[in-house]
Length: 104
Image (cartoon, rainbow, N blue to C red; front, side, top):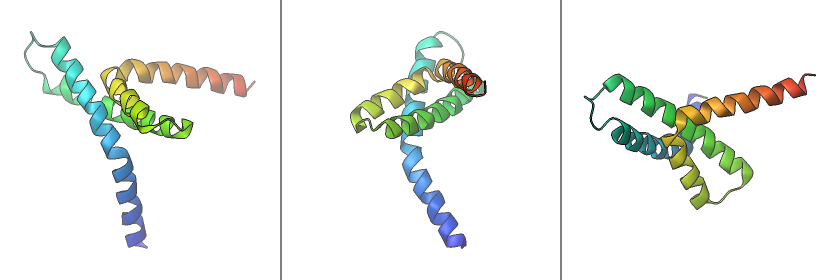
């Protein structure tokens, strides 16, 4: 049983870690671009990386669900890391509006 759980976790990690890392690359680019004249902030950098990793996994799942090819998916995931916070806020708005319409 434990072996099955570990194998499932390995499979999920193998599927979602690459897009998370790709999105984190987008976040690193954005951080470097926007903060090049400021002193480095570990807190801001790490929060940006975590946000980007989550956004990258969400966008990867969405692209796979839509059946997009690997090249389009990769571009979407990388850009989602660059604009992670804005993208997640917008996605939240869309989801809440959709849920509101469904519950009427």
